[in-house]
Length: 136
Image (cartoon, rainbow, N blue to C red):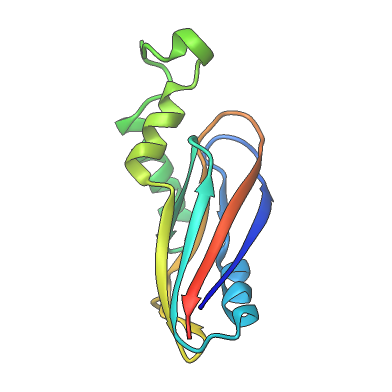
């Protein structure tokens, strides 16, 4: 069986981290499935979904590393079109989705794992995240 929903998330600009874990848990609960997987997919080419610990220092470390690996200021060819090549490249490296198993209606995340939407573009946005639950 399949259950799906879309959620709208407002972001606050580049490298905004939004914890989606409560909405993901709610979708699993609302599906009424006991076991299966949930896919969390960001609809957009300049944002990503990751699993990471929500610890302030770690989030800052992540932002620092992303800025080092794919700096915003660079002579990207795509910038000739709309000046956000770095956002697209970051999204390609981080990926637009995660899939998480669940059992007895509970996400099988580790103690410190949360699911985040990461905004990679400079501007604020309204993002759509697709949640697809496959289970029984």
